Image (cartoon, rainbow, N blue to C red; front, side):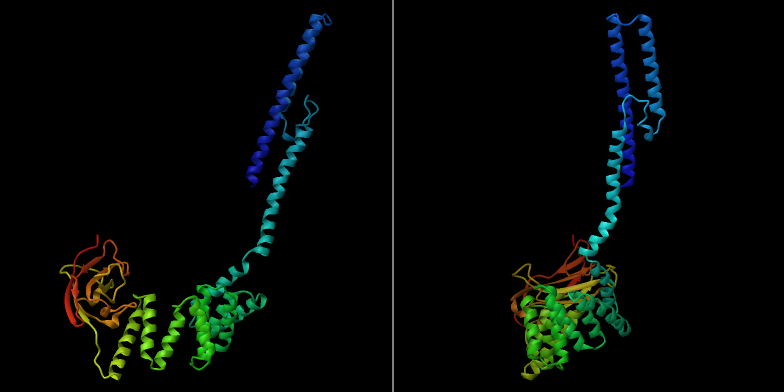
Length: 406
């Protein structure tokens, strides 16, 4: 700000200097015209006229020369015909006002941010990040409990300070304190997905404190969370764990499938599919029946001479051939290093609410994804089978990956 002010002052001084020079010249011409009028009227002799004109010329030259050599502070000199005192005073005032404003702005900004800003939240971000990065460090968790405890004592209306305080209590097994902190956090949040997530933590802490029993308090927190987000992950995990503990495998399978829908390509999803397969076997044994449903055995390999990084992801999926664009009915994930391989797709491989049994005609695809996602992208390799009917029985197909996605 100070550079433009300095340039503005120099420009203003230059303008005032030019104005004074023009005024002096104008006064010279005005006085000369008056002398000529006096001469024409016979009030002056020629010799007197010539002497007065010469004196005016010398005075003009002297004033202009003094103006050119004088500093800005000499603009009020009595040698000039035009007095510059008022202009100089105005110039100083126009310079002083922005200067004062420039000096006041930093102080005012600090005071106003202290009053209205989110400085407390900025300072808490470091504590939040430390909590996320040190979940398995009990000593760090204790330090964070002290720091976050001080923060909530200073301001009890900070929902995320309460939440991360609860996270640190849970990290060191203090679930009674964690439950209180989660409840305080949930009470300060608006009805949105974030509140559903915190209510899931409330339900989990109550469940642990109730010695892994689904009490009315736990069910209340679950209902509140699912009213906001029916698929809140922590709540569905709790329900699945409780169902498995009570050997309610049908309910556990239903909840595990909901969790798979959240991220069907994750390692956790593969573990959940294994849980589903085990639970279905238990149910089949309890019912005295063999596992039923269609099965598709896919013999998968790379084309000869095709060299791909062994760590690259490979996705095998079966889809409803009559309903394009729908999510897979069954899917498995592996890597290029595992090829050639035989993959078995059945109802336990479901990644959503529909399984192989829900479609009469299916198609099977295999995708080598360099981006690590199940969505084909330019440059990936993909192979697609013909449509076929499984007829509720076992089927076997062979796929060779060779074509690039254009």
